[in-house]
Image 1 (tube, rainbow, N blue to C red):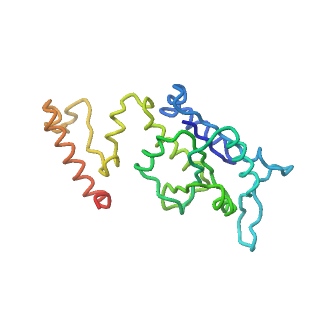
Image 2: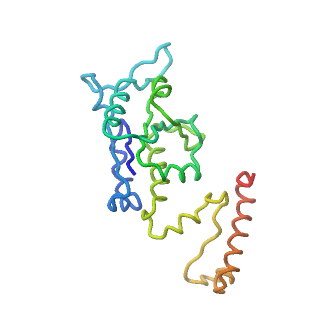
Image 3: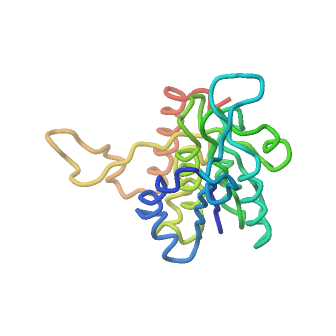
Length: 224
């Protein structure tokens, strides 16, 4: 998979892409990231990529030309399955979306900034808009990192135990059951006896019951 990210703050990606699962996936050749500074595609001598909005509204708007030039340059090198814009009014990003996106080959993620982007970009260049939640962030860089992390960890070989990803919260519309590790007794706080029984069928049933109970209590909306 290749993920190309368009941003005005490329330095924000240096640490997240160099740690943990994302780092290992890159080292294994499972994913390749391209971080593109939109200022490099500006024709302005000061490398500006924003301007005042028509109509006099407050704030600055990202211009269409640098974004179009960058996307065109990337599309000249390869075909892309999706050109994604991280937007608060996009489709809510969830686990089924991450599952389906993990099977794509090449995607572009455009990170918005300032007041927003020239709407013509959304009308003519973007194929999908994604939101990571009902709140506003300074820019689209953090959502781009969240999306990348969620989909890359699902690529076969990205994590040591692939079955672990299949049992994560939301994979079956349920929250994950409680998990425990050694010691079995700490200050009188004991691990449930069923997990120490070695009875795989009963343990599996217990985990499913716990997942249902936690989902009913904490996220009943998932059961609808």
